[in-house]
Image 1 (cartoon, rainbow, N blue to C red):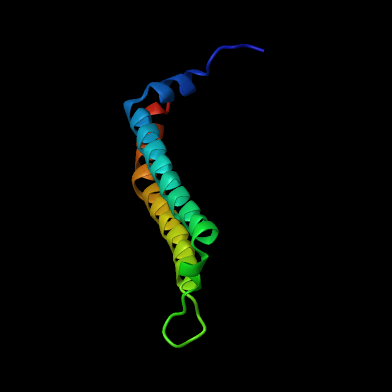
Image 2 (cartoon, rainbow, N blue to C red):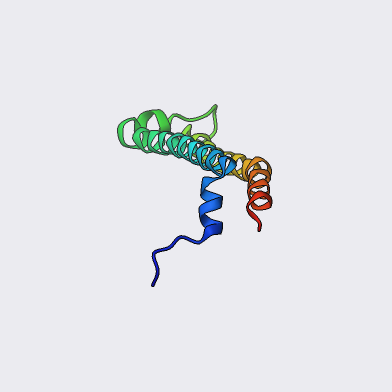
Length: 105
């Protein structure tokens, strides 16, 4: 096997918009990852260290404070997934199309 890099791959990797795409995509990915870890482990930390807080009833009903907080974790996860998909289908797809157009033989 040859270790030679395909000229199309080399041209794509050298493209400034490819570098921009990688930087933006990786930056957003890391930001969303840190945010998700903070929210998820924050919730798990509450479960581990402050059960009394999560067990407080809401109003006169039987629902505790932990239920809406857990629901919030789920909604947050869906929201940041939607944010990533929106960016991927908009800005990232435009950059990819520009890269492919410029890199085509």
